[in-house]
Amino acid sequence: MSEWLVLTLAMAAACAVVLAIVVFNHRRIPEDDDPSETPDVIEYMTMMIGVVYAIVLGLAIAGVWEARSAAQETVRQEAQALHEISERVEVYPLPVRQKIRADIDAYVAYVVDDEFPYMADHGELNDKGTELLEKVRRGVTDYQPANDFEGQAYQPLVDQVAVVDDARGARGQNAGETMPGVVWFGLIIGALVTVGLIFTLQIRRTGRELLLAGLFSALIAFLLFLIWDFDAPFGRGIAATAGPFTDLFPQLTG
Image 1 (tube, rainbow, N blue to C red):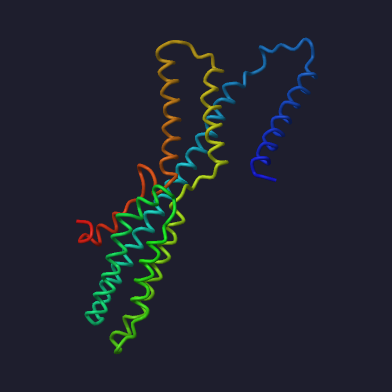
Image 2: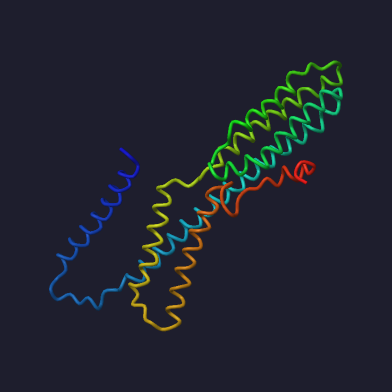
């Protein structure tokens, strides 16, 4: 059974139970009952729906912002680990460190110039970046230290390569959209219900009321747009950037 079918059945069951209770209670009301003495609950219901929807919006914004921040942190970790490798290979012979640094430069240049735009368009990593990182790994792990001094630097370099690989994998997992479709369904339906309840309060055509209704609707639209913009950490306007790479490797990006 799909989650959409379960959601539909649950919502239908909830509505059916509430309507059945209302109809049952209505039949038990005596004929001499005065409805004017019964408190009007429409304002209370409107207020509670608005509060619940505000909480949902807040949680959604916090979730996508956290995902965006986590994506930016993985970029920083990847760039920092590559920078550490480039600096620590100073203890290796000149030909070895030149090759490792050249492989790192090629990988960084490709990530900044090609892979970030590719992630924005496709929501995933590509094989070329993986191949370039594998060259960096082979350059570090295949070298056999010639003395104890080089041997002490070997294992930390291997560990930094593992950090780069882990950060790259996390970057690939964060490349696509993070919000499930069922959450978007709830956000959009909730927005329609919340805005629609304005009309249950007998809104008039005065300038003040129309202005407030328009601002309220615009605020809901802005918050939904903000969630949508943060939803793809690498793909939209306020996205995670390649800034850590350009900061640590300025010679490759001008």
